[in-house]
Amino acid sequence: MGLSLYVDAARFRANQHRILATLPEVVPVAKGNGYGLGNRRLADEARSLGVDTLAIGTYAEVDEVADTFPGSLLVLSPWRAFEAPTEPNPRLIHTIGRVSDLEGLLARDPEARFVLERLTSMVRHGFTPRELREAGDFLRSHEGGARFEGIAFHLPMGGASHLSEVQRLMTDAVAAGLPPTTIWVSHLTAAELAQLARAWPDYTIRPRIGTDLWLGDRGAFTVKATVLDSHHVERGALFGYRGRAAPKTGTILVVSGGTAHGIGLEAPTGANTIKARAGAIARGGLDAAGFVRSPYSIGGKQRLFAEPPHMQASMLFVPQGSAVPDIGDEIDVRVRYTATAFDRVVIA
Ligand SMILES: *Cc1c(COP(=O)(O)O)cnc(C)c1O
Image (cartoon, rainbow, N blue to C red; front, side, top):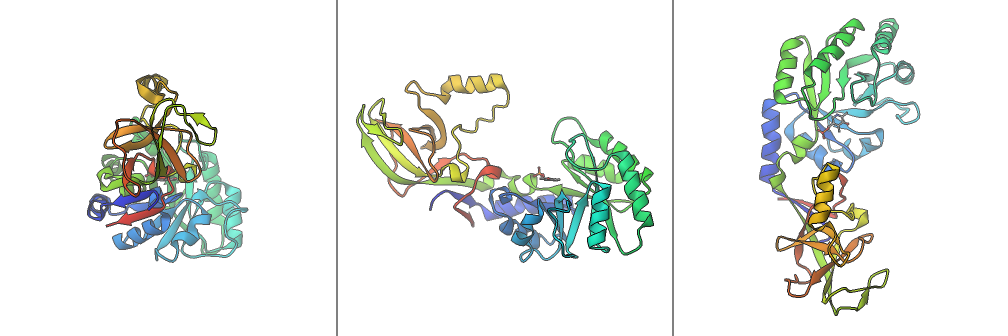
């Protein structure tokens, strides 16, 4: 069974349909580890949702989704001559953030589909206002069937409203003489999207959404590790790669999940400040015997690593007197979905 992600299919899909109902222009995002579910599975969900476009992270991910999702594929990573495919692919919508890349793309495929990305306060990728005007000039002079599909903004998460920033960025798009088509955005609230649509009625607003769409209802997910082995140890007995002595009598429990799955040394605490983290350590991040808190818990009680996680399994220490699960039982484990490689995903 290994490390398993169990998904309550009804809740998982109800959340997707809730978002689709309020934001019918949604562009689902499938990238990286597929938010824990895998990109192919997400492509299948997007196909069932009936959306026309799926956003993927990189060109390397095209093959993971292309056979499953039949529509357009918006590649979020910017086009680069050294990364993009050399063959034209009419299903791809490329993301362009530099004039030289626009020239490079259209030299390879004069009829390519693309969005122009405007640099935002994220300062990740995209055109400055001046460069965007250059891109607009280049497009007007370009002979051929280049397909400009809109302007893209990648906004920071949370914090104050990003609407005023979007308004400024839109002015740049207009100044660049780009025709009104589609605005592709991330991380705006439904209210902000509605305001944007009112302010720019000539444009279609398309929110790219991953986390809220796939992981929006956390109650739909349960993560379980399997108990693989169990050994009673007396105080002072040696165990582990480092031959460490058990500081007290108890059980060494070997459970599935290790560094290859993304199981880390520190349990996710949700503590973002140094002060909160210090507090978490004070509250038992490290026990008196020097064991480190693990993300595994048994019967609702968080357990300690007996030693750092191995490649595919972890060793926990369960002190004498506490309940010890049987080999083959499953126990709870807290993970970050975007950083975990599950052995299996069960949607039922
Ligand atoms: C990942 C990503 C998104 C989706 O972000 P979520 O927080 O998962 O919804 C949107 N736009 C871009 C450019 C991204 O890289």
